[in-house]
Image 1: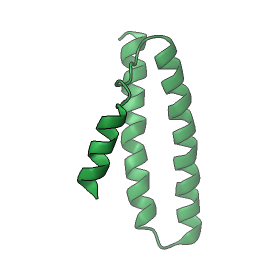
Image 2 (image 1 turned 135 degrees about the vertical axis):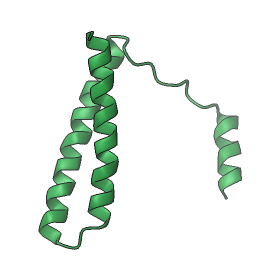
Image 3 (image 1 turned 45 degrees about the vertical axis):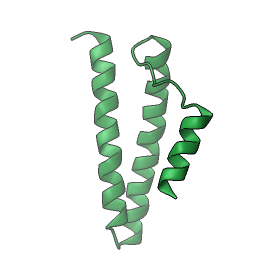
Image 4 (image 1 turned 90 degrees about the vertical axis):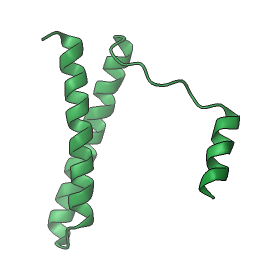
Length: 80
């Protein structure tokens, strides 16, 4: 497995875990557990962003083109 595949696989895994943490946090009543899950999520978000920057710098990941002002306005209008 090459480096690009491994980096993208890790990014996908972290993205999935962030969603799972969010679900667990929103369903947790115990404040100590909730805070622990939030800290783990925050650490994973930081890790994901650092890995994303590395992947982008190496050309492994190319984000979508930024939306135009017209596209943004269209979406805003549709959701209001």
